[in-house]
Image 1 (cartoon, rainbow, N blue to C red):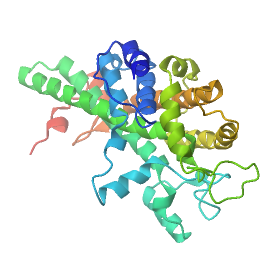
Image 2 (tube, rainbow, N blue to C red; image 1 turned 90 degrees about the horizontal axis):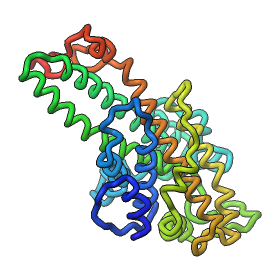
Image 3 (cartoon, rainbow, N blue to C red; image 1 turned 120 degrees about the vertical axis):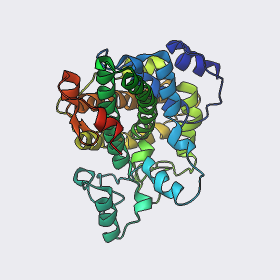
Image 4 (tube, rainbow, N blue to C red; image 1 turned 135 degrees about the vertical axis):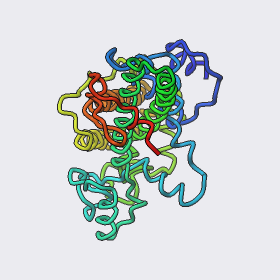
Length: 339
């Protein structure tokens, strides 16, 4: 516990109560959120880079795991967002499923195609759609924030200005929450077991290399071992540079999940070699590289959503964000409504 507080929270100068961290769902997700937020460029809104916002996203990145246990239909609809089970060739579940390269545009189309192929949608998971949905939601959040920020600065009516300010603050709280939720799914996408049919031991498949079939494989890796070896400084050092040119959320999500799928066999080889025992440096490097991949992807998802928001329209009757920011459109009715 002391190691985690020093590494993950003291470095951002935020005081927080001590909490037990026992799994990737806590340690890993917190660190991904913190590292991503600390890496945001200076041209994003300043409120995102405050110590409080950084710490909040670290905590909110755990939120989808904390939703569990509400009952049905809540749990079934949300629990399957955390993973997508791909076979070794990148097909959803097995050769009957579509290649991840051929994901339909809509989740409803994805569900229908899997059902037609005789596959259970709930067994397959729908992580790609959770990631894309999160990116789109954040883009809407940022678009509204841009309008509120610009209108607040220009408004001369004090009552309207006060409303813009209050709504901007509400939107900032929503943005941090939505970054945390999106960040959870992006983080899940960096964990090999969340992208593979071999999600908890190799399973009932051809196993020429004799990989483990222990049903504790998943939990021990993302739990006890990750809690021992994950370090914020190592994650930040391993984060690749930003890659934002021509950002397309679907293409980027597919490429990211395929990269993670490519780490599944290396994981099992390393597990067979004893790399995830004690604090083995080989396993530690693997964990911190995977967390760094998640943090870098989350950073790029945030920045690209911010960039895309500048060309959006919001409200009704719709106004263009760029026109409000340029001072050529009044967003009051679009924001408040006439009813």
